[in-house]
Length: 404
Ligand SMILES: [Zn+2]
Image (cartoon, rainbow, N blue to C red; front, side, top):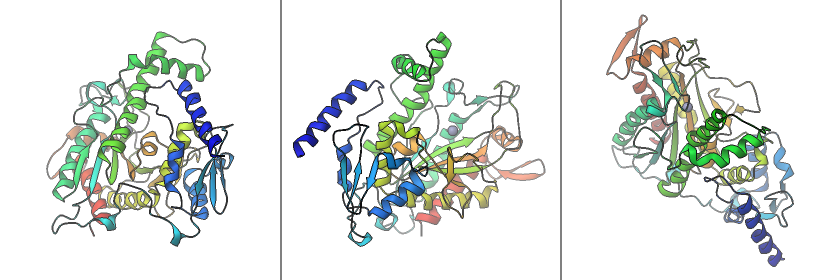
């Protein structure tokens, strides 16, 4: 029995090694999930799958849960299912193997309420000269160009300073504008062609191919690279992905400004049937679920969203398609479960902040003012710098959650 199991894993290794083509892909280590043996009960596992991670129920086609064991089919037709032993009751659960500390495991120093907390800040996108390529750039006439990746980097530096002053150990996923992955678009041609074929295309223009290479570079390869460093090098207690949201702005040289200010915070979850056709994604989902970070992610996001609501009075962004995102907490309309690459790859608790709307007229004006101390009058009301307001809200939320 054991011999066939090992033979099956060996065979699957070669099948997948053969199929692998993306430079960022690593082989799922299905058998490593067994380190989560007896860390969760059958009802707890089923509840997390059905209410958080795969609410469309499609997990049932590859996971079978009995009272004692969950049987996981790593890929269709696999010779052997991966057994995960389940705990008899919550009291019998073994500790979840995890490197990140729970709040109660920290012993903060007096006057440094966040000491002992290791936070990675992940400023979204590349920014700087790369902003146009990544379509995170617009400009009205001769005004200051709005570049999300440049703004998130600036924001992360302000926030890092505040959190360090409170005792936290803070690390950014990058220390310069631009990419962190050593890969470049031209190296991703094979993956780009594969993707175009998977989209049903049999021919494409050089521009279409280049666009595909670029998107694989600045999104897929870059996010994989950062997540890999978070998981393997930095191993923090918490990751905060920093973004500025926007409404469709159309032509970046003649962008539309629309009243659209808003906020939402995303938490890993809501994988759908189509997304779960990929073996790597099914593996990432289970690793995330079995790390049991969801409750903590919701609690942290809840505290940060409340602080934001108090300080910035921005309305919640509402998703209307449950295939994309579903509410994460009934009592807080700012929190959504959504399956994003960054949040599913990072093992530690991670919250993904989508704050403001860069092409809302007031937000646009605040971005034009840049960073400044105190408050400035805009349209009859006084506002702090948008960067300081963002940093204050996140800091206050973290203090309310961790600093007590
Ligand atoms: Zn973004």
